[in-house]
Image 1 (cartoon, rainbow, N blue to C red):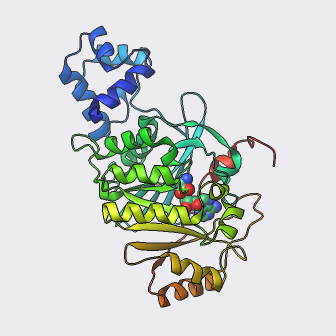
Image 2: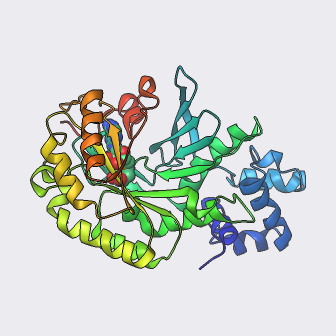
Image 3: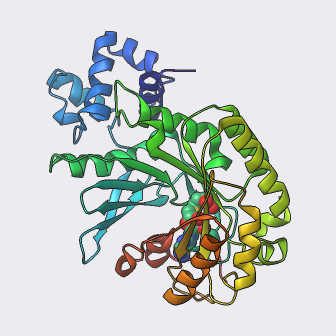
Length: 360
Ligand code: SAH
C-alpha cells in the first residue's frame, strides 16, 4: 500500500492534471523534500492554503496554483453554528458541484468530534434519513473525505485545540466505499501528518455483511458501529431496505465473527422512532441480540427530517427503553442530541438547500 503522503500527493496531482505525484514532481524538477514540505504543511501544520506554505518558493506556489493544485478538495458553502455554540455544521462543495456535509461537535472542550461523509448521497434509502431519501451520486475520494476533517481541524487550531475523534456517520455508506475510506483513515492516522489514533476513529455501517467480514480482516483498531435500529426482520425491513438483502440474523452473525476475530467492542446505533421500534417488546428482542460486554447499544433521539412521516420517541420512552435494556444487563447509552436548531442530522442541511434529487 502507498504511504499516506504518496496517496495524498497522487490525488492532488491528478486533480491538477498529472498522472500522479511523480509526474507532477518531475515536471517541476521537485525534489522529494518539496513534496514532504507540501504534505507536512497540509496534513500536520494545517496550512490555510497554498500561499501559506512559505517553505516553498513563491514562484512554485504560483505555478502550482495556476495548474489548479489546491490543499483542499472541499470548499465550505454554508457553515452554521448552533445557538449553544457546541455544534458547527458545514456544507461543502466538491470540484464537480456535488455537496456533502460534515459536523463538528464540541463536548464542553473535552472531546472535539467530527462527523464526516464518505459518499455524495447514499444508495441505502433508510426511511428516516434525509440522505437516504435523496439517492446516491458517487463515492468520495480519500482526500475529499480527509479534507472535511482538515477543515474543522484548521478552525480548532486557531484556538489551540484539536480534533480528538472522527466518526464516519455523515452522508453515505462507508463500507460501500471501503478502499477510499480506508485510504482516508490512513491519512487521518499518519504519524507524520494528521496523527489521529485508530482508536479515535469510528466507522458506521448500515449493515453490509460481506464488508463487515472484510473490515474484520483489516485488523485495525478503528471502531465499528452498526446501524441496527430494529431487532427483528419484520421491523427492520420496514425502515431499512438493506435488511431485505442481509437479514438481522446474518448481520448479527457477521458481528459475532468480527468480535471473535478482533475482540473489539461494537456499537449498535438505534434511532428511537415512536410506535415503530420503541415498544417494550422491541427492547426485550434487542436485549436478546446483545451477547455480552462487547455489545454496546447507543439509543439515538430522532432528529426529524423536513418531510418526515416519522416521529421521534419522547424522552420518557427513550429512558424506559434504556431501563429495560439495563435490566437485561445490556450496556446502553443515550446519545445527547446536538445541533437540532441547525438540522444537524445526516443529510439535513443539504436537503434544505438543494432541490430533491427525486420527487417523493
Ligand atoms: N451509512 C452509515 C453511516 C451514515 S448514517 C450507517 O448507516 O451507519 C449515521 C447514523 O445516523 C446512522 O446510525 C443513521 O441511522 C443515523 N441517522 C440518520 N438520520 C438520522 C436522523 N434523522 N436522526 C437521527 N439519526 C439519524
